[in-house]
Image (cartoon, rainbow, N blue to C red):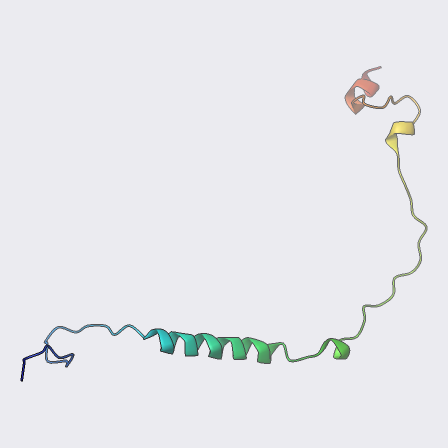
Length: 80
């Protein structure tokens, strides 16, 4: 029989074991499950937002303000 190296922990050095890819996948799946549990409420169980009172739209247009020319800065209009 040939002498093949083994992966036994006979060394005095402490080596950190890296998780196998399968273990990492399982941890990811567990985290996904946890996230889903936190958001278990369905959209039907969430009440709609309160209705806002109807308000007339107020539009302010400084372009049509007397003494103001379209494209002119407010400082230029004030200097006149």
